Image (cartoon, rainbow, N blue to C red; front, side, top):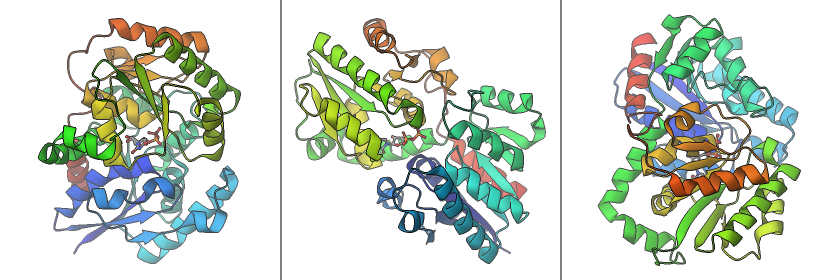
Length: 374
Ligand code: UDP
């Protein structure tokens, strides 16, 4: 009899990392994956399923009920109630969740209440500080407690879990499936050619190779308000001192972020502000870039696949593998720290040993394990 695995997600990074696993599960005759979206990110998810040629079976459309509010309690109520109802109706054999979003934890909690085993991808990332990132660090820790099987991307992540008392035989070190997603999209690029895609998607990008392209994304809650103002001031100073750099800023739809970024950078020379391109198109931009400045988790993991450094504008990162191997520079959020980190790129050399987050086979390992354990 076919076993049903409900794959729950709600945000862009969850889908990007889960998609290759669903593709792998689809290859197995005895497992049926069912994709359920909470709709936590509405705009940012639109069209992503088509890129991976996947069908989302159910969308809880939580934003239609709660609107674009950033109130976490309202989001929690809507997402939890939605997942609980659907899981009660489908009664799956297992639930798959990924990462640290509200949708991750609330889908897991709904499954836990109904005694449905939880398989948890990207387990064991920690800063050990509940404010960094907020609220994601708490969601990770709570999802860990109630999961049956934990897929840790790296040995460091496994170590974090065993330190918290999670039994070793419930943890599998598999790599991060984001590397698989990047490989999947890159294989599509090869068919068309990156130069052609660049002209098609970004005709306004200068052809002059002397101009360095720096991709910027900032969105975390702890980086909003005065912190974001400081980060933007640092970027303006960096550009003033490095006029041959072009900063392309993908501006997150969060209303607070948008307001600050447009207010401070709209008319500053050297900055191009864009709405977040869909994944495939965004990876074309990364292919053309010389560096990334970001507070994103996924970007820290993807940049090594494009052989470019990442300046992490956060006080702490759970992605220590990149920092230790030299792919990432943890800049902090102060103006001098960010400027210093940027200037250090002059001496940056590509680290040896490839992407420290995975080898492109994580999704195969995860699907195999689900198939065996379900
Ligand atoms: N991303 C994208 N378009 C953009 C910016 C980011 O497709 O304009 C992708 C990026 O490549 C990565 C993911 O979104 O795979 C990261 O999402 P985000 O930064 O929102 O979340 P985090 O990774 O910090 O949880």
